[in-house]
Image 1 (cartoon, rainbow, N blue to C red):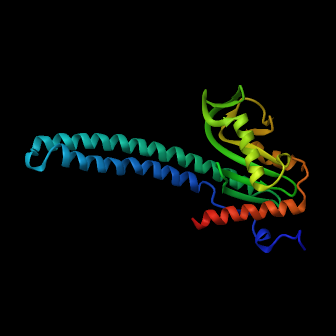
Image 2: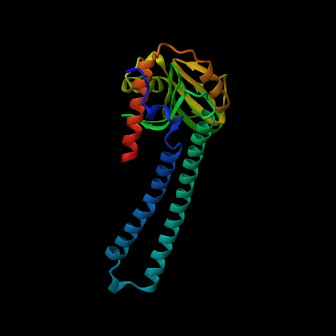
Length: 243
């Protein structure tokens, strides 16, 4: 009976809220500048110009400066929220595709590991996939082991870092790295080369993800290891939900 999964591990196909973390982060980054601006404005009125010497012209100038600052902050906030909303929708698109995987597969969204929250972790009958989603419009290319979006490199999206991140996830799940594959799924953009594995990291577009997952042959994840992985993922999401 030791190798039989508990009811909690068999009663669902997916757990977690794809895109929730990205939306929350975007909202926080958009609100903090407004809060800071309010405090700075209050300090300016109180400290720079005492109420006893405040004239209408002084008040008008300060209000104009404040209005310009608010406008700039508002535009920046809209841009931040828009970018994060695109990222959240990208995760949701990947989640919808993952829901079409066969029965017996388990899908976890927004799993908090020590160094980074993984967008999706998929457990097949004999393999584990750690998926990072990027919503990058336009051309994406792999050059000198770095993923470039419109010729710009982003920290953490180079092959050594992606591979190391996958190794850390495998270590935390207590499995050998050969039974886990790290992936980068590009949503909205176009990779300049065919999808495939590069130094152990699969990189491809959303349309190619499902076929790849189904074609991967397991590399030794046995039933007891699989149950242990599911239990650890369950605990990680339970801890996240309790925060």
